Length: 173
Image (tube, rainbow, N blue to C red; front, top):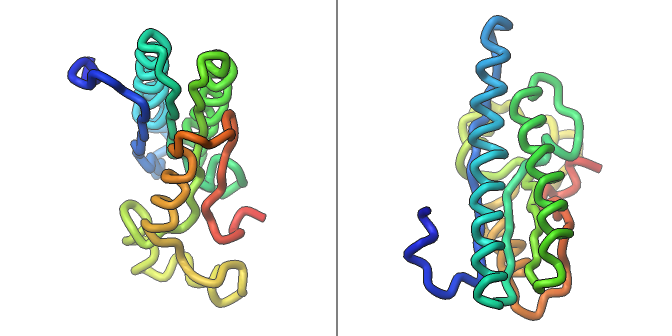
């Protein structure tokens, strides 16, 4: 596996995403399969492998998986993406329960609209301007906001496991 070259694995962050929007209803099944593989199956398999290695090495560790605001709130048109990212959350919580006795923590971050990555074209098009104009959020998120949450969840003395931390400025409230 890709983790074979990591001798003393103590932390893993998996940030994978396929936004998987469906414009052709005939493509829904294939889109949902691809979305599940990229957004859920791959990250969970990497997390499970990391947890096994940490347990075998008796290393207290932390795993952080990145989901989305669309997995914790309802956004029309996001069935394929949101469903796979919701499954990621559930799988992560199961892993957290399975490996908690080994002091291996598994958590999920659910970012909102970030001025980075997949959201940039949507921000540029004005798609999310109403959130700012209506006072739903004060600003769009920054990569640093997610990085701070990752740092918090990876901290060796952290006591949090099996949780979802929404880093979204309150957009999903």
